[in-house]
Length: 269
Image (cartoon, rainbow, N blue to C red; front, side):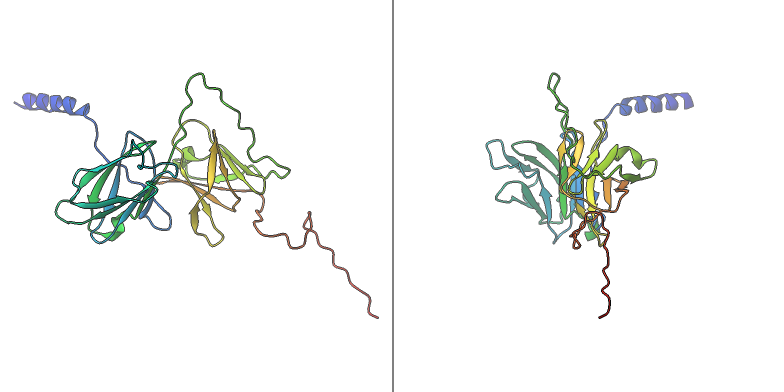
């Protein structure tokens, strides 16, 4: 009897082991407020937006995306349970639950560039809700035969500050850049491999974080500015990078190139 039960359990495990796992991806909360979330886009993932009664949520798409074209589509599994609407540009979608009677459903957004699969969930606590969900987009792999242009040094110039110092634990090390440097105006971070790119934040002088203004040149992330500290975040992983030399983001009031000032003393008359 025991052997039959064990055999049945083994058969059940074999049958269920091949079944896919169903779990939505939550965006990574900002260091300032976890309700402001950033997720890495994938067409094969379902992203979760959590909301509470009396609070709205916003899904922010890439600036060059829109649902206001022939391919645009936005459909909800239960349109009576949620108030859903885009902005005029068609790249932001507002969400607000209008009932607390089992409103959980899904939302599909199809733009001129991508398809977003979203699960809408009602939660009780405001601190568990999503106020903003935005995305970062991994660089698409090049097709076979495409000619790859060497980006060279996007931060070229007479001033070269680097390499940057990096700090992380062993688990987070894999998401960080291979190297970093700046030219006094732009900051460059070079990555290796085709793994997911972390969100990049610039730490301001008061210690707060802001999403870095940047663009990609193949495997180099170019930040439009310099900072005393940058943070790379991916889910619970964190890598910090800072220049080895002091970063001067202010105005050169004395007008010298070396930083040296000579004091002249006049003889008393």
